[in-house]
Image (cartoon, rainbow over all chains, first blue to last red; front, side, top):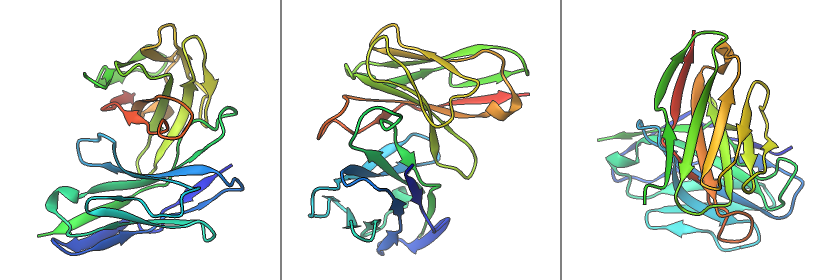
Length: 118
Length: 115
């Protein structure tokens, strides 16, 4: 079974600064997807960014980018120019590319609480 | 286009009572999922469905049953609620397997308290 580890329960950053959230995962598969989801106090789960394991290029979405290191099984999220609205829980998630046998759901880390200091 | 909706938003049950949580999606997605989120934890998969009439167990299926009679609806049932089932329940849906179809879209969650 796959596991996802987020080693930072809480991070704090000054508004307009850059912050990096860490995520490592354990899998024996070669093909999979990785995601970062944001959960603000409203509890809504919002997709931030996704990465396909077969792509060497790191995904970017505006101020959000990832550093995907497949050999190291690391998938960190960088938030540039942090804004007050970025304050939330951030979850890293893994999904196998293979269907069936319970492989269709997401495996989540425990989350990192991001605080933005004004 | 409402996306994924969940009913109810909040519910209090007594131990031993039963209830059904309803998830509906209007995106014509094939796959639907039920997760639970407990304090200090990420979401954990309870059951999922890869199409109308199909269901499968996830990581934590005990104490729950599901049904997918219509493509757009996915029901989660608790036959005899226990305090350990106090949690926030999330429904999600996706187009299915394959590149660009993997993204799961989540509902707003249902908070369940079992006394």
